[in-house]
Image (cartoon, rainbow, N blue to C red; front, side):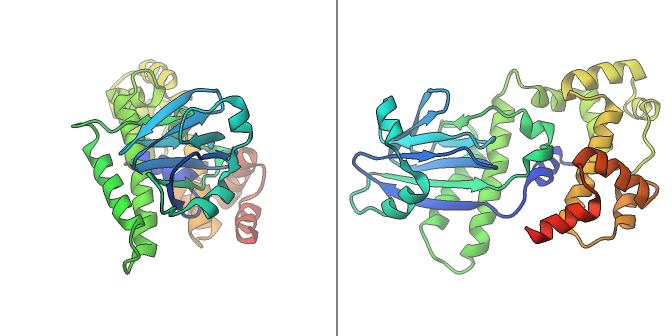
Length: 301
């Protein structure tokens, strides 16, 4: 079981997109809130990011920033006042007109991940509005390697780039979330994954969601009392064990409906429901639509 991979797969739809920019002089671009997660990587030079809450964050060469909840923000050559921000160019227009400016002194890789926010995994929901990972010697070396590879790939048009670049963008998302988990001292989910009892329970539920779990069976599996498991699991995960299992089973069912042609009977067995009817009934309560209509809606979209 790899809970981080599960959390990302549960919410991700489509493929990430990116734009490489070279900008110089006075510039200021606005990105409105959107469904998904955004990121910026400073490949060369420096700039500033101004959040909706008004905080100004300095970004330097090698820095990466993730906006996991799609928060609106501004990127600019310097901290900007209110009137400047109001006049900021929309990023979609900015990216078409400012790319590869011959007088540029800052190079950025900016992009988005498409996410389905209706049923975000709580690990992803636990992320703050802005995850800023500054470049520091000896810190998050794997993230630095991913950024270096991204920079080289984005600057070239070598064969295979259409596969390599989206894959590297997925790798960047994993390393950004890993870095946040390693650095966070107050967030709930990093603590959950460091608690041996809770981590073992999560491992079991993710490894085999179709098993006939109960509170007693899960507590025995991880070697604690039912009361201890319930207390520690609920405090760190935010749901009781069986409530989380139900949510995870239905989240997995939605992912299988998105990603496979499997019939409802096979999906029901895979996620732990005895019949397609039982799955359909539970799915409709959580998603507000039947599995068939959910899949048809994805096809129509």
